[in-house]
Image 1: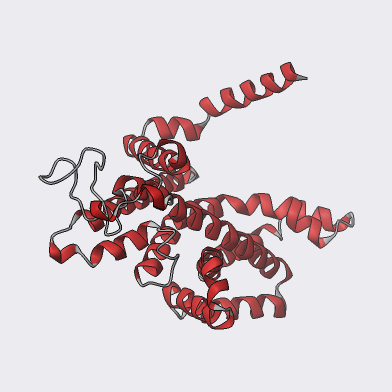
Image 2: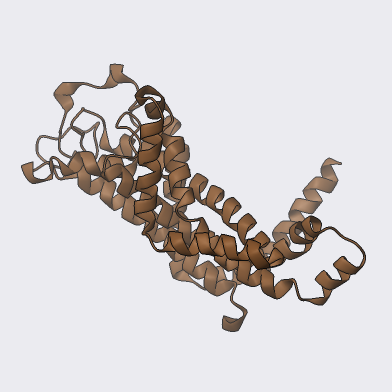
Length: 312
């Protein structure tokens, strides 16, 4: 049994190493550098509790006397705080690692939720057609009339008004994920709807109908696998968009609380001290956000080109 599993993994790895996607990846220096940067940042975020120099959530290790210290290479800095400290005395490097965890969690979770919602609605709209299609697409058209950030702000505001203050602070991360997801599902729905309308008229779908396969099974087992290609590329690019949206909401003060800082929250905190000379409090989180979003965007662009048969 174990030998069979190892053989299957080896066969899968060999197929991947000889695939067109991996060949395209090897020929793209930009994709390699982007993947390296993204891997380093994701690895640092995931392993933050193990490799971070300081535990930013352990208040016993935070000294207010160390607040707003400059980076270690600047006069007045300390060697144990490589990138300096923030207004609470927390190590900037450590807060970047922990903050990236929250930004990545929000980005991945919101994209997964919007992907689930958008693909499901797009599949139903494209396959069913008629009034169902018209209803879903009119809702999508109305939502497209508003910027995504305004929709996320509206959803967050409604959640704040509907929940007690204490409950909202505990569920702030969940509310943020739902708000971003509900503001981005339309792109997936429209993409899947168009592809589904093409696929449902093909012979294999007609054959499945003739032999009595249910509509739900046709959509999930036959149509869905054939419409996921462009959606996965769109999802990769939208991870960066979701991270930016989270940073924007946190910068505006409606994201995660300061006790659980994301990159956007760190930038907002540092912005208050930027003009007083403590530039490192906002510059380093800003650079980390740019590096993370840029690397994900570049990987998304490469994946889009690699999966485009017209460019092969």
